[in-house]
Amino acid sequence: MIGLPAGTRIWLAAGVTDIDALKALLLQRDGEVRQLRDTVSTLEQALNGIDPKAYLRHVLTHIADHQINRIADLLPWNVAGQLQRKTD
Image (cartoon, rainbow, N blue to C red; front, side, top):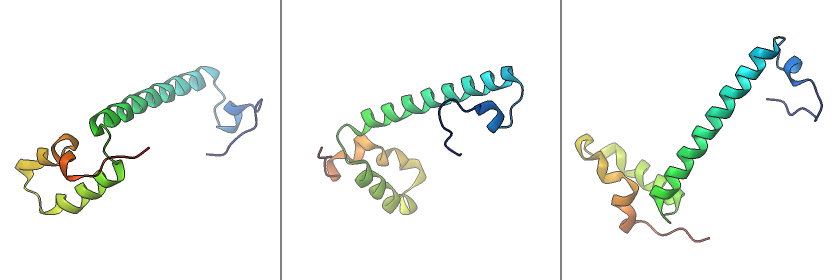
């Protein structure tokens, strides 16, 4: 995606000539951004002070040899004691 200066006719740069189609596209993207923001917020709450990189490293290290019926063991609240806390 190319950054466009303010005031540029974005709908023309995006190849959209129908303004209603542009509005629908922008509303759809706005909804997707809001949903992603909510998902990130939920993940941050689930991590509850756990360093995200340490958690991801732990999961990627252990998931290959982990039993599928015990996958819940890798959830953040179940491995919190094994990981270092996030320092701000």
